Amino acid sequence: MTDAAAQSVGRPAHVQLRERCARLGLPTWRYSAGGHVIAPPAEQGVVGALLRSRTIELLVERAVQGWVAGQEATLTELFPGCWLIPLPDVHRRRRRAYTVAMALAPEALQSEQFLAACQSASLDAEATRSALRGIAVMDGRTVGRVADLLRWAQEDLQAMARGEHETGLMSRRLGESYEELALLYKLGQSMNQLDHPQRFVRSACAELHEVLAFRWIAARFSGDMRHAGAVAGEFFFHGELPAPVDQCSAEAEKLLRGMLGTDPVILAGEAAGVLGRDSMQVVLLPVFSEGILIGAIMAGQKFGDDPEVTSPDLKMLGAAAGHLSVLLENAALYERQQAMFMGTLEALTASIDAKDPYTCGHSERVAHLASSLALAHGLSAEQAERIRIAGLVHDIGKIGVPESVLCKPGKLTSEEFEQIKLHPEIGHHILRDIPMFDDVLPGVLHHHERFDGTGYPERLAGEAIPLIARIIGLVDAFDAMSSNRTYRRAMDRTQVLEEIRRGAGLQFDPQLAEDFMKVDLSKFDELLARAQQAAERKLNRFSHRPSVLGERAPAGSDAAPGAREEAA
Ligand SMILES: [Fe+2]
Image (cartoon, rainbow, N blue to C red):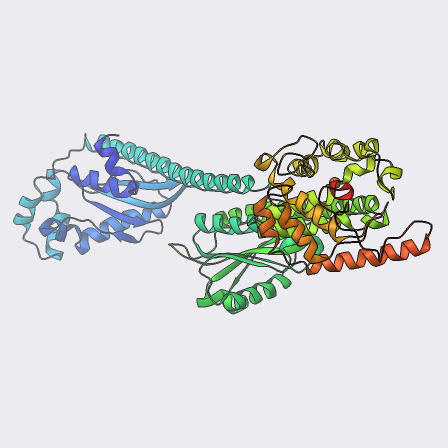
C-alpha cells in the first residue's frame, strides 16, 4: 500500500478530494443535494474573507441552485477569469451532495465582481489581489482539463471508498460468520452429552457469553419432564445477572410462560421485570423439543457501542437455541430409551432371580450395594452408576444354567458345580455385543475371582481382578450370606461382617472390605425383608419344596464364603 493509499483508509472520498484541491490552490465548498452550504472554503486570512464574502457567496450559491434545479452540472464561468468546477457525489444515479471547486485566472483579479467582493468584505483590493496572485494562475485553455482531472480523481476516490466499505462489511460479516461457526463447532462437540444435558446447557451459556456483548446469558426450562427431561424446571446462567438468582429465575419462568410462536422476543424495561433493569433490552429465543416449547435462551444488558440487540446477535442466539432443541430432544428420547432398557433389564434379571425363591431380589440388592460400596471407596457417582448396572446383570449368565441345577436344594455334584461355574462366561457372551455394556463386562466375567487367585474363571489375583469385579464379588457374597438359601438359614449381620473381615486379602480386596464397613445397609435390609416376605408367600403356596426358614446354618457349613451359592 502506498503512503497516499494508507492515508486514505477510512476517510470519506469528499474530504480527500477537497484536500487535493487545496493542494492545487483551488478553494472548495461543500453543498447538500438541496443546495445548502455544508462547509465553506477552509482558506484563512484575506483569501478566506474574500471567498466567504456575501458577493462571492451569492454567486456560488446561484450556480449551485441552478444545478439543483436540473441544469447540467458542468464547468461554469461565474465572471471573467473565475470558474466553478462542480463535483457531485452520485450514488445510484442520485446526487447526494456537491463539492464545488473554484479556479481563478489572473484577469479575475481585475474584474468588477472581484472589486465588489472586496468591497462587501471590507478588503483592500490591492492587498487581496497580491494574496491571490499565487493561486490565480489558470487560463481558459487549461481549466477544462483540470476539471476533467478532478472528476476522474473524484471517481477514483469514490470507487476506493466503496471498495473499503465493501471490504469492511465483508470483513465484519466474515468475523461474525467465524464467531458463529466457532460457536456451532464448540456446541457441536458437546452434542454427544446426551446423558448430561445440563452440562451442555451450561457450556452453551458460557460460549454465548464469551462471544456476544451481553452481561448475562441464561436458559430457563419449563417443568415438562416428558419433553425437557433432565433440565425440566431448571435455570442456568453465565455472567452477572441484574438481580438475585431466585428472582431472575422466577422472572425468566414468567417470561417463558408468556412466549408464543417460534420468533425471538425482544422486551425492554418493565415488560422484562427484574431482568430488564435500567430499561435494557432482554432477548428471548425459544427452545423446542418434539414441537413443544420447553424453554428459552435469554440474554440481557448488552454493552458496547450498540446497546440494541442486532441481527447478528439474534442469529448467534438462534443457532444456539436450535442446537439446544436438537440436543434436548435427543436427550429426552435417550432418557426414555434408557429407562425402557433398564426396565427390561431389571425385569429380565428379576425373572432369573425368581427361578429360585431363595435368590429373589438378589440382583437388585447386589446392584444397590455395589453402587454404595463404589461410593464408599471414593468413586464418582457416574462410576457408581455403571457399577450398579454391572451388579444388576452380574448373574445374567444363569439364564444358561439348567433350572434343575440352579435350584437344586441339596448338595451339588462336581459336574453340576462346573455347570454353575460357567455362568460368568455365559453372561459375558450374552452382553459382549451390546456397546453400552463395554465397561460393565469385566464385572460380569470376573465377579467370582478371588483376591488370593483361587477363584474362576481365570484365577486372577489381587489388583489384576478389575475393580468393578472385586466390588461385585464382595457384595455378592455379602448378600448370599445375608439371605436364606435352599440348604441353610441366613447368617446374622455380625457373623456376615466377621466373614467379610476374615475374607479380606483371601476372597476380598482388603481395602474394599474395610470400605464396606462404612456402607449404610438400611436400604439393603428393606429390600431383603421385602424379598424374603415374597419368598415365604411363594413357598407357602408351593410347600412341596423344603423350607430352611427357621433353621440355623451349622458352624462351618456351606454358608461360608466360597461355598456353593456364594460361589455362584
Ligand atoms: Fe454369580
